[in-house]
Amino acid sequence: MFARATHALVAALILVPTGIAAAGTTEHRGVVSADPVDTTPHVLDGIVNAIALVDGTVVVGGSFGQVREARSARVLPRANLFAYDLATGRILPGFAPRLDRPVQALAAGVRGTVYAGGRFTRTGGAQTRGLALLRLSDGSPLPRFGAQVRGGTVTSLARLGRHLYAGGDFTHVGPAARTALARLDAVTGEADPSFTIEPGAPRGGRTRVHALSLGHGRLAVGGDFTTLGGLPRAQLGLIGVASPAATAAGLAASPAAVAPWRTDAYQGRCMADFPGYVRGLDLAPDGSHLVVVTTGGPGGRSRMCDTAARFETGARGPVRPTWVNHTGGDSLYAVAATGAAVYVGGHQRWLNNPDGHDSAGPGAVARPGIGAIHPRTGRALAWNPTRTRGIGIKAFLAHPGGLLVGSDTTRLGHEYHARVGMFPLPITPDS
Image 1 (cartoon, rainbow, N blue to C red):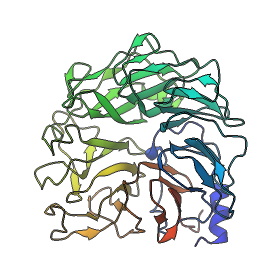
Image 2 (cartoon, helix red, strand yellow):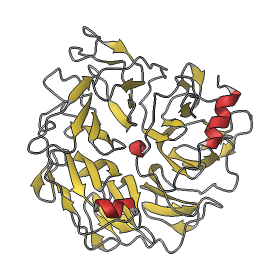
Image 3 (cartoon, rainbow, N blue to C red):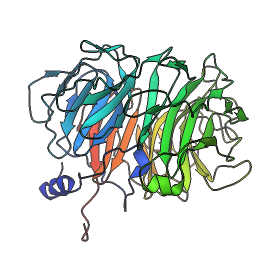
Image 4 (cartoon, one colour):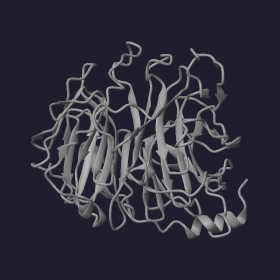
């Protein structure tokens, strides 16, 4: 249940800047409540892969066909994308674009627009191959944005000013060859000719970028690659994309360059089915550190399989993790670093479990499907709302009012919240 007073707080806090690039760009003073709000709509089938916040509107993307409001029995058709009002949970009636394939990534645009990425080829009657810029008013694509992504899927997006960064396993953006990573003009969708940094030398059969996080002049990139811009970067690297002054002004600067920061932490192998196992990452709000989550299967203390790990971004040379938290054999897909906590989600059963092997080892704590880690110690916090595990959480989005969650299951915080939920920040005397 969710108190009426807290609902008023959420309404007061939704005036956030347009263009949130990543889950951790919002700093929280404390840990969110373990009691989800009652107003979030329900996604009645499939899975939620991505969430964006455009002013006070939440946009939800994934693979689904039906949604309904929390206090309504009316089922609404929505083809892989819908939007609702953050404060009330009311589904936007005019935003019902028909995408022919799932949405994998979202990023807030400007003036009531949102970027959607995936493997779709059409939005209604318009060709929008892999990437579209849509109006929230009516769901129509902006014709000036002409990005045509070919050869694969867009799986992650981040925007800074006039620049839109896209990651996935694609090979081209329009006529320009771009392997798995590209910087586009956020207005026209054209590939930036000055940005040619590419990941390469994958362990699997295809170069893939699974996650991006953007902040403080850096773009963090994670996926199946062992080089970035020709330099050795096993599954994880940082790219300098803007000066501090440009970042403060909301502008991106070129040329971009691979940062000297590197880690050998992800050179080790996990299960053969997971040649590349980095799945999610998030820069902290102050940019001081990065948290990475992985899949890979039980690996024990010596491996980074099925873990969350913190890395200091200001460190030099081969950077070792500040801390590592092991699940003991279950995948983590999503992470949000808010300063007060590091939220992790997947289909894990435990945290604090370095000696587990699909079992609870000494010191393990149960955190089914969702958990929070202390950002300094790396140990699980007491916060334990629980969720039905399923495939796992694929999307977090921190904002001034709390933490949005997207997954494939229907029980969150011991309540029915089908595939979408939100944990609010508790009211404090100075709120």
